Image (cartoon, rainbow, N blue to C red):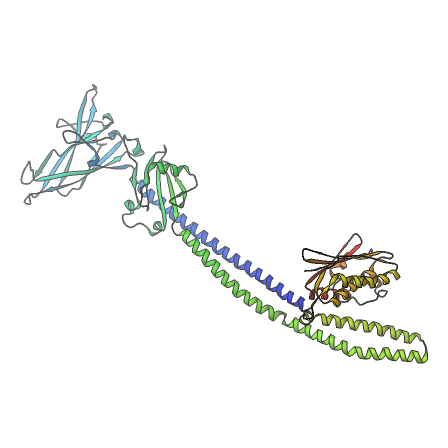
Length: 560
């Protein structure tokens, strides 16, 4: 019974530990899922911000900046702009004007933007629009859609920009300079550094000849105030027009400029792709005129995930260890009343058994004395029979009580021949079986040695054979075998039992349980035999089980 209590505590600890482990794992899983959801939400917020950034850049996507130092220059010093003027709404000239004459109250300078036009007669001629920088100007705007200020040979004319040659137009060098001190002032200096070409609405800049994809970064849009959310992610994007041409590549917060060939391969990867060892998400945002391709990777996600995993495992393990200690302490307190109750029960059975032995012995001796003096009598015979039964019951109870003292029993273990012990027991029962018209068939393997208590193994075998003889069918055979295989010794006892109920199988090792309830008065015994057998097997660290199939009742015992 102490072994069963120990097993009960072990089962309680294991079950409680498994439940605790499951709860901790579920909590950690939920925490990780919440963190993943939070990361996804942050990724969505960051991608929306990138879309907003791209839309901000789209406001001037129809504007192209050209540095004049990178353009072709004619022999006369004019800048050649290889763009289609028919697609241009206006041009902004960016430069600086200065005067070395400190006494000048005002100064200005200018030149012209001119085009190759074909008149109604098919004749080619150059016309131009004047540009003029006054003191303090850094940029001026020339409107191409205004047809009233074109000049040809110094005279204003009406012209239509749609008649201009589509190959190019020219930005002249500075033609004139004036100041308050001179009409032809060499002290006035004008330098045009770049131009911004503003294309007409709904006209893709790529339609213009020799247009190049715009390369930018977040700092070109936000200056130095890039939102912190974008800095938490490695992101960049590109913008396509409806014809699939790449208009802009924004390298975002990357340090490298991504070439258009690489961008095209990224666009081809519909879902995710890897760059520089990081897995980027590909998100697409479409509008009527443009498609924005966003490529984003959380710089902190992988680091945070790793840290969260480490913290989760460490904290979960620490909590689990604390819970194991608490479970062990609680289990000890939980089984303490059971253990104390069992000890009191065992003590009571032991005391009662020893106290009952004396009166039973006195009753038996007295009835024998009376029988010798007065001769046989049915009342005396009844007393003797009941005394004998009471003596058997007391001995069985004491045997169970003694077997429960595990430490005391195991200290008496010694090596012995199990084959010889069981063979001798079977030999004794063969004659008893013969008297009841039954036959015992044995199959005992030779030279099986074991460390235990040979007297208890002898008692165990006797219980099995006695039980088989008591409940087997008339004129039947009882089979008992002993074999050893792979360091496991198996003792097997089988008998035919047509009247056995399958429902009784789970209870046959319980104390005072008797299967044949309808004839319980006809069978000797108190239902303690198989309970004692189970205790003997337990103290020998074995396993006992029973099966009933097709009228055959079998008990298996394994010793390791």
